[in-house]
Length: 184
Image 1 (cartoon, rainbow, N blue to C red):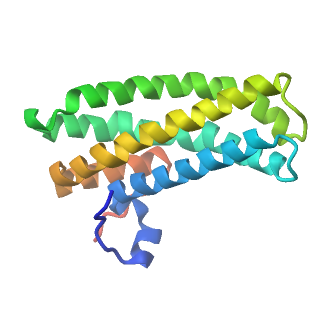
Image 2 (cartoon, helix red, strand yellow):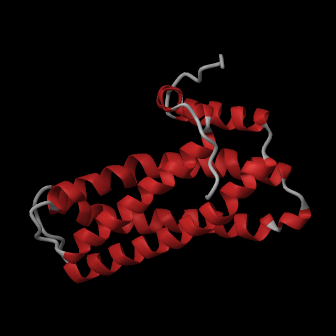
């Protein structure tokens, strides 16, 4: 996304869900970092930071990615379907992204056991298979993020109303057990 609005950094840190599209964009940046960590891990399973990197990726896959996918599936995508016009051509892309979210579950499930082993200082039972899965996951995620950042979020900025964004932020906060600040 090229043109994110300027915001007060203190306000954003204390109330990140006031700007839900920026929060999603930031999540995408974190996901890119996870891709780089996965690639580093796949490159050298015995690196001195392999255990810490595996634990970091594992936490992301088990805890953060499911929340992010729910933000999109349960809130952002339905709002886009409601607000977009036919000329936006969003139906096929959203259907594709939803299908890819389902594939994320399969990719994550295949990575969890070897990541747990690596996080405890061990080596996966089949290192070659793990490396292929890890690199495939990173590639898959980067392509997926490209579509979301290049098309979905800019379209959401244009089509979603302030009320839609407040609803989105409120739901995202609730999903994380965070009280949404009602005052502006």
